[in-house]
Length: 195
Image (cartoon, rainbow, N blue to C red):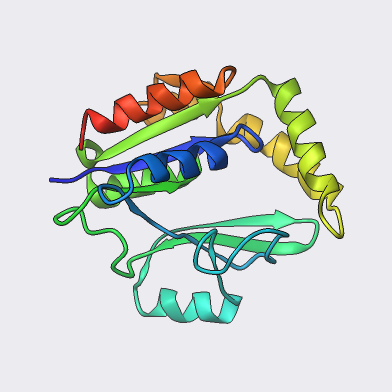
């Protein structure tokens, strides 16, 4: 059976950039999964590429149809934002291995849904000071920076990625994003071992 690779890391850890380079390296052999969100689209994000941007009403319709595998709600300073993975045909482990970016909470639910043996978590780690600098630089590029949300996410990461949570998911390995080429190579080697 194919595998579901789950990229995860605290905000501004570099997981998105790593994800895109991994997808490029494994083009044709690793299927990408586009998650859903009800939050506003950011500068540079594309519908159907970064996320499927949907209304809360559309999400509720999918939920009523039993098409949501896992869903998380974040109470932001701008109101509730939902992020979710749908049973929409994108993940078919009988056909191909897939990869997507998730949170630890989503990882646990996807492990339950697809079986822990079929799900491989890839945790990208970066020093908190470096992450904060990166997040601030990224937010300054927004037409309307949301600094309060940046701070909320940064603080929430501490509990979301606590040692207790990571241990409960069976995540012992950390891919330290200090040297980009090295960590990219380590992640690619790990994925290649199961393709």
